[in-house]
View 1 (tube, one colour):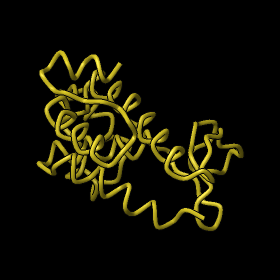
View 2: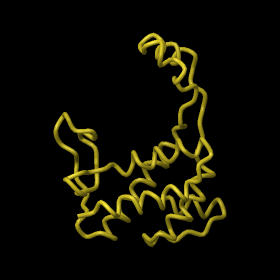
View 3: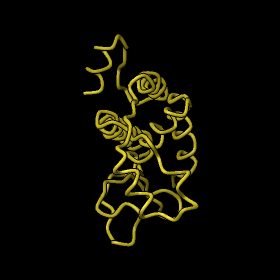
View 4: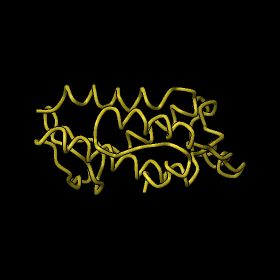
Length: 151
């Protein structure tokens, strides 16, 4: 699906699971990430439920539904790239209610049995895009950092 969306936006992308494909994906992703204002009711609900010292950090915007959908598709691509690049990496569903990604798809195992959600990683990149960070650099950085943790 990403490939078709990107071609519609004038990008040439072949999802061949390489570092170069991540760079192109990141460049396009940067142009797609968007936010929408949060309602006054949601902001007030957060203010009512959070300590006063945290009020200045309550977000006034959220990622749009379209952006969250892109996070799912891009995260799936990132996960598959890891699996093809590193034969020891596999998809699994995180079990155990005390785990960070309970009942969510993750990839792993990395060093010390660590697993990660590529969907969450890509969502963090979306928030960084909103702050002006280049997505292509972040996608490549993720690959570099997590490559060093593969067992």
